[in-house]
Image (tube, rainbow, N blue to C red; front, top):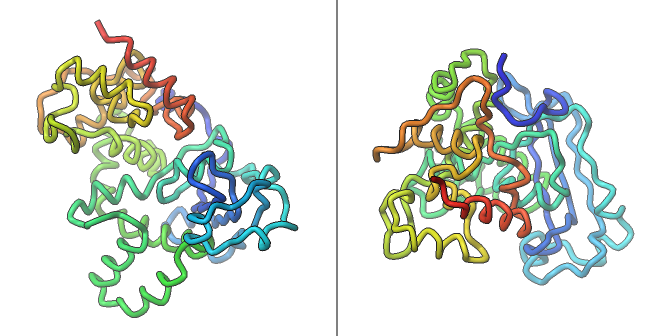
Length: 310
């Protein structure tokens, strides 16, 4: 089998993970929960223990974080240091809602592939006013006639052990929509045996590459058709989204970036794009280090993209 993803994973197990943090900026975990998924049903594996542990972030918890998780400094002052958290060695895939934030909080561990239910939900259910876990849960509860039971779970949101259960429910309900895209990904890559979790990883990456701008004076335009001076201006912004920049530069300078852009276009674009398909030896996974949410890595990716393609 050709190497289509940039790095080998540690193991084959799949977990759903959530981290509550001391702040939104340079977050450190105050609580981490994860549970193993049953790879057949996509539900939490009830035969394996759920992990939930609080940690001392060794910095004051911000008031905003307190308002979200209701964890205060006194709750964690005698807990293990946040630096002691480590993933199990058998984990190869991590599912989470806005998983990039959680990955930053736990130190961006390598040799794992992420599946982001937030980006998947935005693509699957664009009609929702927002895509917070609680909003999606009420949407699903309404569809299934289970609003009262949904409320009983949602009122405890932003407790890590509850959040992972909601995330698993969202993933399970995304699967009928995602399955068709998984087949398309296998066809695009000529890899009929690509695992469902590798497909979901690539799908969640591809959904983050926009096919239309959603802001500014060029709203509604394909990013790669925006004027060159606008693209340069955008990439110079401190908080520029690297996935938007990736789309603006048609994948940029790297083979992995161009392959991800080509995959996103194949799945979602109704605008003509440059013909590009990866060979069997090229990677299609965006570089984890170049697109994580830490500012130095974000700038590194944008700097790379700013080297304009010939």
